[in-house]
Length: 113
Image (cartoon, rainbow, N blue to C red; front, side, top):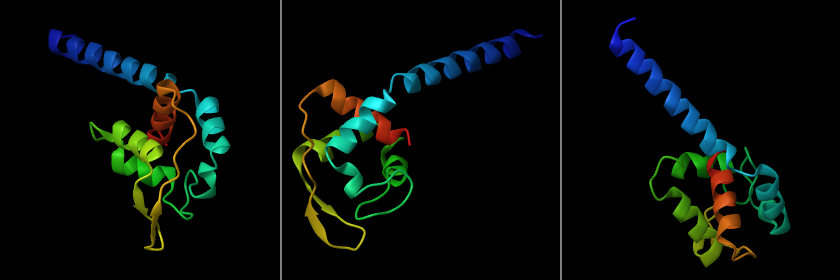
């Protein structure tokens, strides 16, 4: 094999490994439990629209943005006015945790949908 092919394969392996490590860092059970405890599923579902957008729709909007995680956490902690699927607006419920690790985990879980 020529050196360029070997380097490309090595780079691909490294990128794949980093991607798997990043995804493995999300504690699915803890994130789901926190969302359930805070009634997030009253307005959101994983893959269908309810009163609010699905987590898949939220992930598609924010996943590839450098500040996506930050925006998700801000929505959960600051209670901004949000536009609902029916066009009305209301204040987003503020999540009942101040633990930065829990907030980061939940945001990453939502963005990984």
